[in-house]
Image (tube, rainbow, N blue to C red):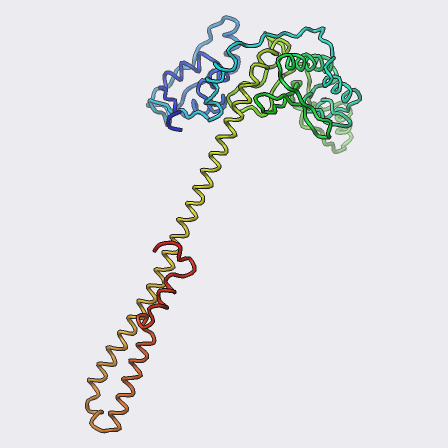
Amino acid sequence: MADNQIRISREELYEKVWTLPLRNLAPEFGISDVSLAKLCKRHAIPLPGLGYWTRVQFGKNPKRIPLPSLEKAVKSQTEIVIHPTPANGIVKDLKSDVTAEPIRVQLSDSESVSHPFAVRTQRLLSHATKNERGLLIPKSGLVSHISVSEAALPRALRILSGLLRVLEEHSFTIRWPREDGSKLCVLAQEEELGLMISEKVNAVAHTLTEQEVARQKRGQYIYPPKWDYRLNGDLRLSLEGAPPGIRHSWGDGVAQRVENCIGRFISSLPIVAEARKKEREERRRRDQEWEEEAKRREERQARHEEYQRRAEVLNKLAAKWSDAQLVRDFALAFAKASSQLCRTKAGRKEAEAFFIAAMEYADSVDPLSYVPTVITELRGARGKHRF
């Protein structure tokens, strides 16, 4: 990972974040816009506020927030090191190799709902129910690629039909098995990518209805919802499972409609597919490294435990050997001190018996008297680890 580091000065990064929006700048560093924002916060680099880029778009020149000096900045450094994530680190190469010639497609409002999968979607949603947000839910089957209101459904179906038609014209394979729970997906670089056309839902604080207000006035306790959901018909076309830092979503805006983004959407498929492969390979590599490191930790722990066990055994054996030596020294000292007792036959016999008994006891506790047993005890059950 050290070879993939990106080094940039604090001043250079400040200039970049005030020149391009974070979502457009982040892929240059191989990280997500959220990660880039956190990086700037850590280094006390101010970011443009809400509405800044809209004012720039309309030709205005809004003021920048000055870059604070290093003395006032917290945890700042003169050089910033950025570590691209594996999936994002390949984005630049993929863009030059895979999307050198972007696909130019624009769907018209007169696009017919003719593709079989679009017709199947229309049939499943023809008698759909609505969830708490007002989005259509089929009574049977799964339609994971359409999440819109009843009013936006005709347009969403036209976009879906045109998109699937153009995908097949460009040799992409589309799958939607008949089995329950199956999802519609497009095959790119042998990767199955899910797609979705969704409608933007705005959540606003719930406003009490007339009935709820009337019940409150009557003293009745009510449980109003926390949010009210409002649909404005704006659609978004997105790919599921794209790694961070790679654009995978296009939506209605001031200057564009989803119908105009079909070419860019299709051009992104190989990038997302290849990035997912790289991400999966990198995850597999990291998992293997973690497993190997965990194994090494276990082995180190086992060696440490074996070391402690043998140290305890040695301490006990040394203590027994010391006790045996002490008994032998005592027996010899007793023999010297019992000279008067040995003047009589009976006394000499009694002194010899005591001396022999003491030496036999010393031999019984002395680990050097049974070396093979000592070696076996020292080796123990986990003798595979060297001491």
